[in-house]
Structures are given as structure tokens and as C-alpha cells.
Image (tube, rainbow, N blue to C red; front, top):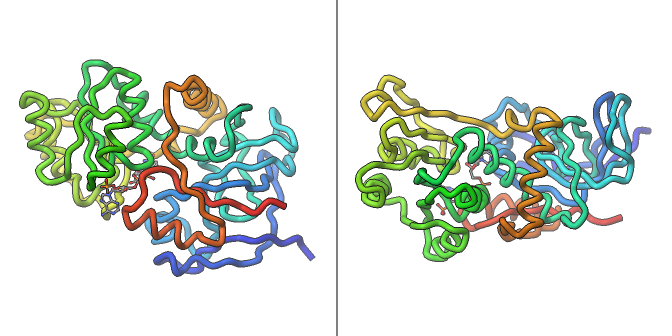
Length: 328
Ligand SMILES: NC(=O)c1ccc[n+]([C@@H]2O[C@H](COP(=O)([O-])OP(=O)(O)OC[C@H]3O[C@@H](n4cnc5c(N)ncnc54)[C@H](OP(=O)(O)O)[C@@H]3O)[C@@H](O)[C@H]2O)c1
């Protein structure tokens, strides 16, 4: 009989009610993979997209894409890691809400001493995403005014702090007064509501517009985000928390000011061990030095996975949501 483990399985595409606890076969690491016993797992919009059927992943599948744990076994051809080592990942480890998962070795992140599991998992998806968005997709600098939607959210808080580290001025959108306070505490210079945000950005930039807009809200903001940009500005569409981004007529970008639009994903920015290690060194370095404060982490027992999804999708959260696996 093969060994089994507890897993959270998406039985069919749809809402959180389609998350089921099941016993499934424990995976074994193949060449180039490590087997990890989970300690904590992050809950992300990518999990929502997979569950809803917005990605290519076919149901049923083991849910969870991000986690931190201890290496239980190494596949052949894996070098640079050891059994018992504490590691994390935000890609290459599908099934992270299970007790064990296999992770592709190039995607494994070594967690430095002094960074606990909760801090580490909070830094992976949202911290690494903010890193590539502020350094690679658009290299922010002191001359930039940037509009960050959902500035009090998980990515929003990291991105605001990184933009400030690079000297940029941040305008953030939020939906409530409590979230306004969170965005200001992270260093946003101006925090505004969603109503008429493009006009407000123009007012705050002397009519010029923002150099870049980071838009993870999608359906309800996308068209207006284009109108918040300066000539030759860039719209970085990072997600769709409010629903799918509407189709775009590329020809319209000329009339709107020779704009650039990109739709990047973190998966293509953590492809090699070198890239992972460069981002990890900066992100964990800023945490250790105090240059960046890690947004608050809300813990859920793994048995509360449905509650965690419901909280994320109902717009109630401001930081990282983490599922805690039982210790054994
Ligand atoms: N492309 C990438 O590489 C990448 C990587 C990670 C995450 N993401 C994306 O980045 C975005 C933020 O992710 P996150 O994990 O940090 O989540 P989050 O920002 O903590 O949560 C989403 C936020 O979006 C705002 N929002 C506006 N309209 C909404 C609606 N109708 N329903 C739900 N939320 C709405 C809410 O903030 P307010 O209430 O203040 O409006 C909400 O808190 C998501 O779109 C996610 O898919 C992209």
C-alpha cells in the first residue's frame, strides 16, 4: 500500500464549497525535485483563479501553490539542499495545502536564519512579486509617481514600501478608512478612493498623470487606469480581484498617450535558482535590516481553509493569509 497524507482537493471548478479534505497518495520526489513536509502555506489569488477554473489546471487537483516547510527527501540530481533544511517556494510546488508536496529544485528558496516561517511565507508571493514589479517590469526611481490599486492589500503594502525605498511617490487606492490608515503607514503619500481616481491622480500630478499604474483589481479599474497615466506611461495589469480584465483595443493606446500595457506574472520572474536567490537576498535583507515591515499575517488552521478563502475574496483582509499545518 502506498503511503497516504491529508490534502485539500478542488473536486470541481467553482466556489470555496468545492474544497474537500481527502486522503491522497504521498508524492515521491523525482529527479530534480525535493519532497517537503509543510509547516505553513499561503492563500493567494492564484489559488482562487485555479479553483474557479481561470487557469489551465483541470479539476480534481491538490490545492495550494506556496509554502514553507522542511525537506523530507531529495530526488536525484538535486544539489545545494539537504534533508532537514527549512525552505519555501511560491512556484513549482502545486499541492501546498497538503501535508507534503514536491517542489522543483530551481524554485526552492533557502530561508535564512532569523526569518520565521510566517514571515517567510508572507514574503514569498507578495514580496517577490513587488520586487520584480518595482525593479524589472518598471524600474522605479525618484522621478516617478506611481498609482498602486488596493494599496492596503498583500501586494499593495509590499509594493508601496519598495516604491518608497526607490524614492518614488505613491498614490494608493483603498475602499475603507481603515485601509487608508494601513496604506499611509506603509508610506503612501496620498490615499484616495476608487471613485474618479484618474482625475484625482491628474490633480495630484499637476495634470501630468502617473508614470506607472499597478492594477490588481482588474475589471472595475482597468479602463480608468489607462486614463490615469502620463504620456508614455505604463499600465501593469497584475490581476483581476474584481473580475476579468476587459478586452483592449491596442490601437487606442496611441490616442491615450503612446501608452505601454503589460500583464506579467511572478512565475516568469522566479524561473532560475539565480533569479530566486537574487530576489530572496534583497527581500529577506530588507526585512532583516528593518527597511521593510512585513504586512500583518492572519493565521488559519488548515481545517479552516474555506474561511480563509472567504475572507480573501470578500475584501476583508489587509495582509497575508496563512494556513497552518499541524505539527507532528
Ligand atoms: N501578476 C503577478 O505576478 C501577481 C502575483 C501575486 C498577486 N497578484 C495579484 O495581485 C492582486 C493582489 O493580490 P493580493 O494577494 O495582495 O490580494 P489583496 O490585495 O490583499 O486583496 C485584493 C484587494 O483588491 C481590492 N479589490 C477591489 N475590488 C475588489 C473586488 N471586487 N473583490 C475583491 N477585492 C477587490 C480589495 O482592496 P480594497 O478593498 O482596498 O479595494 C482587496 O483587498 C490580485 O489581483 C492578485 O491576483 C499578481
